[in-house]
Image (tube, rainbow, N blue to C red; front, side, top):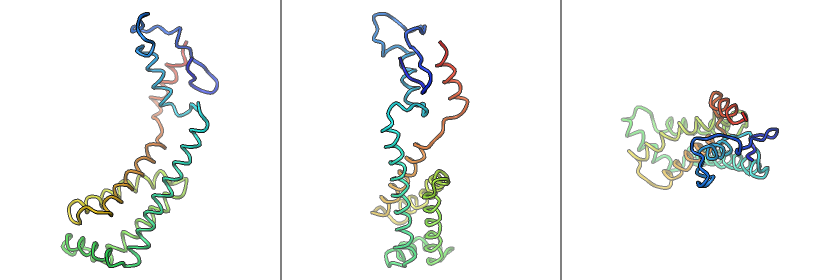
Length: 189
């Protein structure tokens, strides 16, 4: 028996599959594999309440880490005018042929990072914030690859992009057509 929701159970014994053979292991049966994949992908199944709570804690930890990372970079480096930050943004301004002056570039990215961190901290806008952070972090990564070189800030940008993408992966919603088709296909007896 495989549990598909809190109210209904679907039996795999009565299903007819073209791949069912008495001498073959049940895990090689396509219907059983389909049931296992549906169980793993269906977010409505709560087989282990502890895992659900751990997932929520993980999402909160990711939100706090990324937001602290962005706020720390904005407040401690960009707004404070640390010489290392001034040198990096001067190099970036020179690479852009002086189209954007160093203070405007530095303060502008600090403001953008502060707004993104606040968006990511608010639970209702966290998904939008994560998507914006993922898109925004491509620019620092490319600037380190082509202009600034690799270092601690490059690894920091990669980690921030990775965590934002992990958050988006865990809060994704399945499309309606696929989930409706899976539910109706698996609940027929």
